[in-house]
Amino acid sequence: MKSLWKDISKHLFWGVLLSIFGYFPLYSQHISNFISLPPGSQDTDFHIPSSHVFQYLIETGDPLTAGGLLPDRCDFAGYVPINGSSTNGYLSVNSERTPGGVTVLDINYNTSLQKWLISASQKINFNSVNGTARNCSGAVTPWGTVISCEENIKADLNGDGFKDIGWAIEIDPVNKIVIDQPDDLVGGDKLWHLGNFQHENAVIHNNLRTVYQGEDDIPGYMYKFVADTAEDLSSGNLYVLNLTSSTSGQWILLNNSTPNECNSTISQAAAAGATTFQGIEDVEISPIDGKIYMAVKDDGKVYRFDDSDPLTGSTVSNFETYVGGMNYTIDYGAGNVSEPWGYGNDNLAFDDLGNLWVQQDGGNNYIWLVEAGHSQTTPKVKIFARTPAGSEPTGIYFTPDHRFMFMSIQHPNSSNNATTILDAFYNPRAFDEDVVLVISLREHLGFPLNVKLIDFWGKQVDRKVQIGWTNDNVAQISKFFVERKDYLNNWDTIGQIEVTSSVRNYLFEDFSPQEGLNYYRIKQLDFNGNVTISPPIEVRVEGNSFNVFPNPTVNTLYFEFSDQDRSPVEVSISNLSGKILWNNVLQASTSMDVNSFSPGIYIISAIGKGVNFHQKWLIK
Image (cartoon, rainbow, N blue to C red; front, side, top):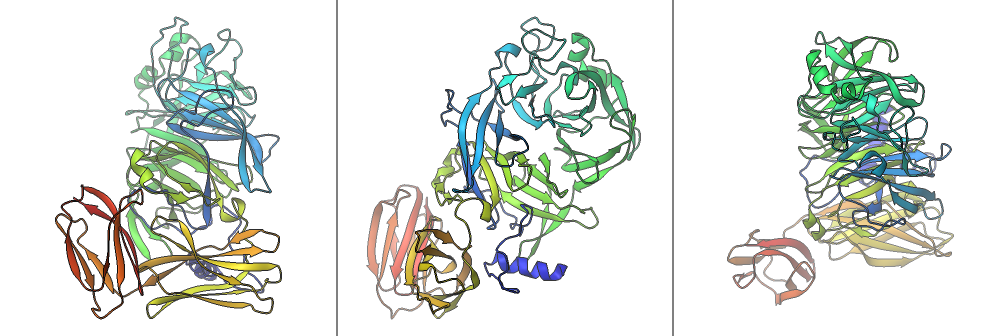
């Protein structure tokens, strides 16, 4: 059965929909089920599997309903459900800048539109705690508050006895305020007794008292805090980890009662001889095995260990590398390739099945998925996303039903606006600003996929492409539209077919495909005006009847036809705004001088019988 599912998954990757005892579902029901992306370097786009789609929620510079704009450096995106709801809650978004900030979005999922909506948005006022800085990752507590972590340290300039920056902060997302902790300062507090260091994140054990934290510094330390009272992090014991062997260690108790003791967390850890790590980026607890997982960025590894007792235990055991530090074979549907894990494993998130999602800050800035049951000897590693140039992925968090994933894209290049990709609602999106996204399987966002295609295929025949499909639900369908993706990643309608109720099998011929990969999909219009869209398929067209070279071009550009006895082809050169700067009708191989063109990127297009060529071109 396992091999059968693997075969079916590969066919889904290529867009072939199978019929098994009726209809095979287009996609599985869990967000972790996808065919891995092939490895690759960053470019201007955000790449996720074709089984998944994304929706822009908000980006840097967007206005907030309570006034102001969303800040940049979007990081942790923690979803707090209202009464356990997976469709109604608060999304808390950190801003990793100085001064820092947290913005809370009141969000809800509209089932009719299959879209998340923002009903209110407001920045948290940190004046009561003398401001905040570098709000990096964080946590959602089991009791419905948010912890935001400061990845910086700043001395006590306001004279309250505590250093100004370098703490975890607890926030009430309902009332949009910093929580005033009991028995500390009047008006507002940070979580002083969790220690002062470069906090990256926190994770709260289901005992409602134990908090694990990592220090994102080199050297950095691993900490455990045990609260005196459940759901109250204002007081308790603070420990630091010391490994006494390669596989075991102990928790060392630190002093954290007075302001001076809270301020001196790092120096106490050093004096105690605690184990140093090369930048602890995230700490999480597996919902399956209960182990503690920690991402160490400059080691390029995720470690895990057992805590003998999260409340009273003083020892740890089974410390080991869980993932990283080696190459993994990536099966991307069309083949296998060995890819190094690399450095920079950063934010972690477990889903309910025990799969570990790892966001990478460094290397190719992937989002990795490490499937439950993975080990270094029997790896189960996939690539879920490749992020846009200049950016890193941050802050993954799931709704309780794990249908939706929230995350941010941080500091992408402004030049990424050279291209756009389509979101779940077929809006072109450029990844040139920090943005907060929601991601799901295609069936949960955007247009519903109820096109009942038993078979959908495409193949090259001579110099054309034949597209065929079978539909077993045509009684309510008015038209089919055949769409092909153009060189700007937009879907163009290249034909339409009126539906006849007695016909189940349909065939369409594209007489001007582009050489190389062509992407096609079917859009269905029913008599009620509803539109549904199929997953895409790809068809490779071979045969170099028309060629342009070299790329990049310095002085001379060559146009070459393999067949000199042919119909005319209209060739044009445009800038990225679409303005045609040169065009001509060619019927034979020729060349042209490009010295009159300013250095830059252009679009070369060639349209004619058997030729449909569109490609970006660099002229130096």
